[in-house]
Structure formats: C-alpha cells, structure tokens
Image: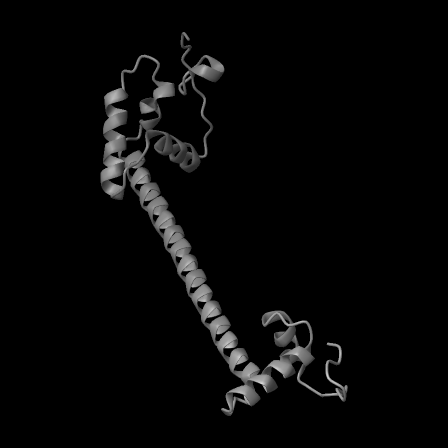
Amino acid sequence: MKPVFPGDTRTSVYINSRMLFLAKEVLGLKNFSEFCELCLESYVMSEKPIDPHPINEYVKELSARIVRDIRSQTLLISENEAAKLEAEEYRLNRETAVKNAAVRVFLKHRDFARYIPENDPGFEYLDQFERAVSEISQLAGHDVDPAEVIRIYYQETKTKPVGSRETGEDVFGRRVLS
C-alpha cells in the first residue's frame, strides 16, 4: 500500500511463512501489510483486546478439518477395501464349492461326457445333464450355470471340447450329422 498520511513509514517484519501464505491466499489479501493494518485498525477501533495470533487459530481449525477429512477418507477406503476382500473371498468360496460339487457328480456319473449337450446331438441325455447340474447346485449351495459345469468338466478332466460343431464327431468318435 502507498503511504496515505505524512509520516507513514515502511518497516520490516519477520513472520512465519505459513502465516504469510494464509494472509495472502486464504484471507484473500494482497500483501501482509494490508493484514497488519486490518488487525491494528480492528484493535484500535474496537478497544477490545484481539487475539495476537488469529492466523494460528485459523491454522488449527484448518488442520483439524484436514485431519478429519483424511480420517474419513481413510475410513471410506478401508471400508471399500474390506468390501472388495469380502467379495473376493465369497467368489473364491463359491468357486471352490462348485468345483468340489461338480467333481463329486462327475465321479458319480462316469459317463458325464455323454450328458454334455454338444456331445449329445440327439438330446438323449438332456434330462440327465439337467439333473446333474441341479445336483451340483444343490451340493454347492449356489446356483450353477450349465456353461460353468461344462467349463469345470473340461478343466478337471483336462480335455478339450470336441463336439459335433467342430469335428463332426462326438466325444466317442461317432460321426454326427450336423
């Protein structure tokens, strides 16, 4: 600010850098002199003692708010991570239960490969396949998709799907009309 009254002088003041930042950026003042003038004017006009460090109170409030925000974000992140872990654990438990149930049914029905629709062009074993899928669902305690059962069968038996669509033969080497 430019001197207004005769005798206005310029002086140097040593201040904490965060106080200068708050005076300029947070309070919207152009320079620290303006802040000092406002404080002194407030003190002289009100005839009440003012807090000698009003910025410190603001810094305390601001830092407390930042700490609260960080804690709430951390809580949200940890809740989100917990939900992800819970979902992953559920997925793994379901996958294991379905796989174990499927293997039990595969062992019970040694000719399960015939039940798979792509190996049964005449749909002679469709009822057995549907019963096997429902048995797997019941044993696993989860709803199971027939495509999932077929995928597990090929994974567990380490075979590849060889149905009438690809080779013109079923799994047993019989020629199938397409």
